[in-house]
Image 1 (cartoon, helix red, strand yellow):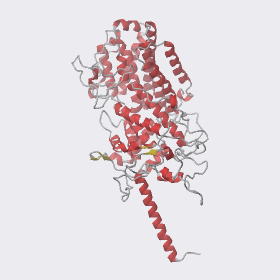
Image 2 (cartoon, rainbow, N blue to C red; image 1 turned 45 degrees about the vertical axis):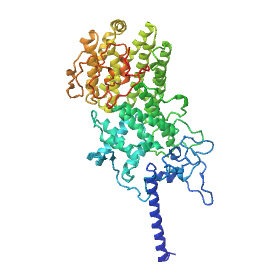
Image 3 (cartoon, rainbow, N blue to C red; image 1 turned 120 degrees about the vertical axis):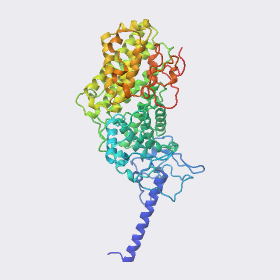
Image 4 (cartoon, rainbow, N blue to C red; image 1 turned 90 degrees about the horizontal axis):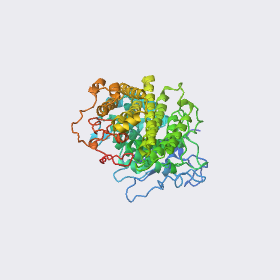
Length: 632
């Protein structure tokens, strides 16, 4: 029997009032905590059965809310703090609650009004705006061109996320499609614009020291307030920004951002495994493992590059390595699918994590050891054996020719990293060996590894020229240049040192390797202008080197490579120039120890191998000596 008309009107008014109230509450929650996905919070918040007290209620076996691992301390003075302790107390005993139980407030971290805010003005659910310190940031029309944005997002996930899967692709793309519904100050926009910045860099859209508009937009969303709460989203922002800035010749700022991400990872407990049997094996928990090992790898590589102490330690890490999963059809709440025996988004980071652990040992025990320490080559050979064992243990698809095109770049970068670590191992070993014979053996191993590196990189660039994008080219140039410097700097050594080691090498192979490296760098100029600057440095090394047959074999001038359009300035005639008038990559600077270089071969370059930051930073060389300390 239908309701009378007056009752139907009352029901309709009540429903309208409840809908308005629900919308207001949703807007209020998003205004107080823009990072929160309200829909996800509602799905993970269980409604208790009638008659059961709501406090601390959780059905047995229910998954923990993703926000229970997160925290917020952004409360005004005198306000009552939440019960989240922020100390990453992961699930224990028979509950999955990460902190002090579970309630609706814990799915809304930071549910406090700030003194400068008013609840009477909920946020506008319009398309995101891009404020800056000086007011509105005028971006190009590309930001409103969906076709352009789609290309940049695709470039990021195809060429970058396959090496460092910081973002879960399906989750990001869902947000990307609904981005106009997000509040204008939602932290996700920082992720969105840094993804565009990386995609734009990969496609060669920003050259030289020109500031990328997408990075400027991302930076406008980053503030001190982000450090007052610990969320995976915030950590991902700093992780992406730090790695991006490293590759844009701003290593100091990038180093600081990576450090912030590392501290946040510890605060979120990413270095810890939840006790067995206390969690559902969801993709969200697997994503936490992935993020921890990415932080671990970036900290390891960045520290070795800059000659700074490694922060991550294997001693307190209990997080398992991620599994080789195809999660393209999964959400973060999905049960983890079965591992695959083929290339996936996670294949490269799994291999790199195992390699980084060996690399940390090499760096601590050899590369950064004080010069006064005496090294037995047995230690070096043992570490070299670990690198070879790692390489032999790689899955078959790391050496197979028939692999997806997108995987060629990520797996090749890992192989180049191993060769670079082996070169660093033997370079550090020859520095610490007190026996002349042992030092010569170590130096020969270093030179042979450099030759192997050059041959592998140049062969790859010849075989797969269409695979070389700006991101992959950055690694090719860095590793190729460093290996060539190892060989070329040999000729800057004192004659009595140079002749002994050079006679142990195959002169023809040595000459051919340097020539191949220079030819490859000349071709890579199309992808990355840093290659032209590296060629200029190699020319200057040749000009300062001792007279050898090499000069007539591979000597070329800067003009031979048409460097007119690159940012290379004339060499100063000030012969007393101190090396810290400009900062070079520390991993390269240490290669010139015990040589006769005049410190001017890096002068006038804008960008790698020179850092592109306004202030000089005191680097620490691997032997513990500040880069700006005069060498005796």
